Image (cartoon, rainbow, N blue to C red; front, side, top):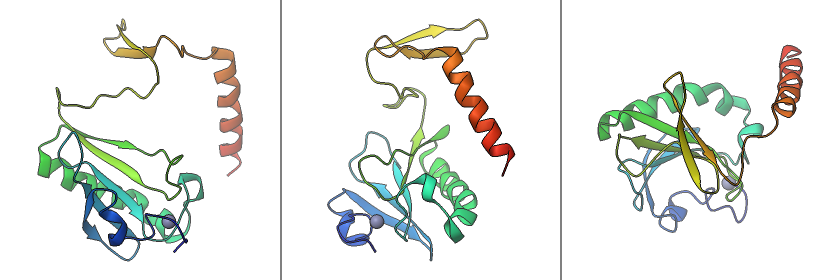
Amino acid sequence: MTQGCIICSGIRGDEALSRTEVWRNDLWRLTLSLDAEVLGFAYLEPIRHIANIAELDGPEAASFGATIAKVSRVLKAATAAEIVYVYIFGDDVAHLHAHLAPHRRGDALNSQMIRGEIVSEKQPNGFERFFSREFPALPEAEQRRIAEIVRRDLAGQ
Ligand SMILES: [Zn+2]
């Protein structure tokens, strides 16, 4: 437990975060929000203090996939959702937590993740592309440069 971390305070911190614990095992716990725009909005977090996704290691890393899949299936079924969105941020509360948001067409959620006025544009392939007028896409060359770095670094692992 890390001093001052509200997530490390477990059930005691849940009230302050307007949520209730619904499941735990030795490594993970799942809480449901009591103050959400959709039913079943949940948080999956390791019990051990792991600051963010880049620091996920050990048995939590080994079990993350199976755990998030299991709880997502239950959330999806319990809320009759079409899909479960997963968001992981980490810049406000420095204890890894995945937001699991069961989503049904027409509810309060969408797939926009960008600041500013969002514009949607139908693509020739049928997909809808959302973009922000204030934050247009970065230059493709810059994105390709990062892609090369990530490709190279992962090839070496
Ligand atoms: Zn913590």
